[in-house]
Image (cartoon, rainbow, N blue to C red):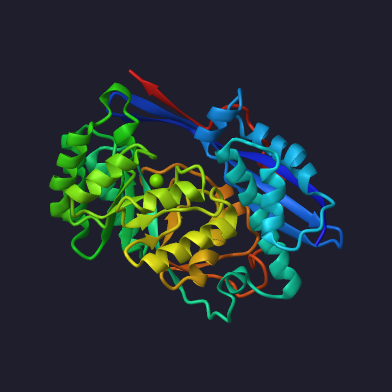
Length: 405
Ligand SMILES: [Mg+2]
């Protein structure tokens, strides 16, 4: 196929009123959530879509204004220029063209992701097959996918326990939250959650705050001690308990504890995830929006299946377009049992509203009792609602800030 036009939109969804969430030694400000949408057209008039997985840390690292708008510009100009008009016969043609530009690794992986996902959407539409069948290379009967509810951001212990019980009533049997320290409160939080939801619900702890607390970040001994104490509450996994790319710490932790470990979302590339997978972590969290799209993540899924001791569970904390894209991965892969479902909205105690997450699709997703059933239509199988481009204009600046006291 020949790509003739690329449009990339940076959209913003203001959080009104702005939220301030205290953590141990500081607070986090939430101004808005951003989302970058790519629309890719071929010479014969077909249209493919992709969420552009720009993380805020990457924006801070590579663009002076830390803005998703700058990332959208880069995709629409320099990167699109390398692809438009070229004959694209396979995803490898896209990654080769982008690698020629010599971008920093993280930006390169994110840029490849955008065009790889759009390519699969276009290719599936052309041959009349859903993306999960292209990936699995066989007929697939899509089963309902189990999702875990991902919420819980920097609250007091009772806030998390209350939220977990609300989420259980909604039909989810797994709940992930982000503790905010100090260590004794992190223990109290998991104790209260377990007490409230009983033994039936799985609890995942996203511990990225533990190394984001500035001078109060936990050292290795504190993390090890915390894991030993948390083990009594039977967590499903502890996610990013130490700095990403500190593979040595992951290795020592995996050897020192029986608590399952998860990580990978912050890795710059599929190669980074591969390296992490060798440390003894139990769950590998690649994301089609960040890690070279379907092609990059599918290679990781196959490597996990070959290895047998590590499970690929995609990371996903954005819109329903990203949810659907990652859902295709696990529909194609019977070894991957779970999908991350971000719970937004003011109706769930403690989260922030992000209506753009759902508005981006005009297709109503079949979500019930904590499960998603993907449509069996070609490509990504969903219609994108392009009116979001007008309805959610870009707002300058970062979406969130960490302030240390
Ligand atoms: Mg996480």
